Image (cartoon, rainbow, N blue to C red; front, top):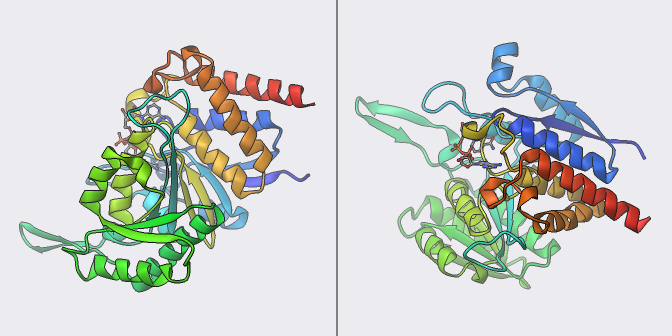
Length: 342
Ligand code: NAD
């Protein structure tokens, strides 16, 4: 079979380390990938004068699939987040974050299994800010009927195709009656097309409290951009933190898979980073490109490796191992699985 052509953006900070680990693990499954690798962020700015060169966008548009490591965004000054630019330019309007408890990662909760669907293109991330008069700035929250309707449809379609029972819209429509009101209105309208899926809604502050009391009551959560950003990190914390949760940005032009966490400059280059989140994102990617069996074998191997002792998992999830220890254990488990299955 011809190799899959996939755009690879290793990113910076711990990005190159976790990306190298995931690329090695995918290779150990036997899935053939022809990676098109590009610099983005400050490295690309220094080399090419643009943190997100056009050829990167062209590659993703051509291949329709990309795997991306985290990229550092300068705070308060400097270039616009390339993550936001990628999502907006390619119109990757749906951010998907499955949040599931993993055996061997002990947290306060058991059997958490929910999916956060976040609208990716508008809301307060529109970047429309200005100074009204000295000392007063205004940041515009944009909510449109078009984007709210298509993200609601994405959430219900996802629920339908993944046999989920309920979609909960999350909002603050009691205060932002027009913007969040429109988002909620679109959700309710779309929900009527899916009579077999339960639809309800929660005010965002209440949702946060409910999530940390009993996360098991939720199934698919649908949120605008900002609430989605915050709640997806909260949800990651329920199952072990940013080091273990996958993410995907999906639109009509392609799909970009990336971990939820950032570039973790505090541990970069120290062989301490947990590649699990990036690997879980790669599992979503393999499912997306039809490599279902390889995705399943990676998932099964993750459970075995995490179970096999602290030396094979990184410190952020209570282990004693390095990035390389985890990678080697994954490859060995995948190879053993293949030999046993021969
Ligand atoms: P961060 O996720 O990089 O780090 C938060 C904490 O979690 C740190 O203590 C870090 O060591 C730890 N951590 C994160 N990922 C880990 C992993 N895989 N293994 C072990 N520990 C891990 O968040 P931050 O410090 O707020 O952001 C750092 C930079 O990353 C910022 O410039 C931010 O803009 C950027 N960022 C990028 C993305 C992305 O590219 N998608 C997402 C979030 C943040």
